[in-house]
Image (cartoon, rainbow, N blue to C red; front, side):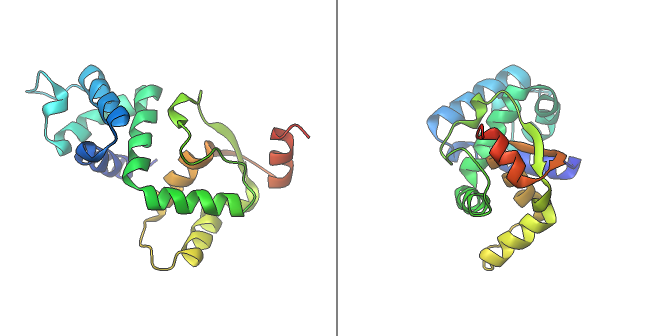
Length: 168
């Protein structure tokens, strides 16, 4: 994730905290108090969103639990994008958890990514299916990663990947 995009995403999550569901919002507030140090604030969760976001970068990079909760909050703040990306991945034959699954409970990301679905291909397919939806490539990529639970580290054939995971 590029540094500027990470900061923008953190800003949007911190600014959107009042709109989050109670479990995600209160969990994020607790983690901000515990992990984020904002100069001049004893309680970091009370700092302005932009300042809190800048101070949250370190926690986002170092704490898997904080990262997961931030991404769950980000999904909550972008429900239409999440639903459309989930539908796209399923349509393309991906095996993904239900959209409402608690991805923060997952132990991490799988490192195998279908080689037939590079980001550029997914972006083009998303834009073709949703021509009226304005969304950045960064947002599309992050949503694909979060919904799929996969990082594009090791590229493998899609059919073999999902057949292997299904235990066939």
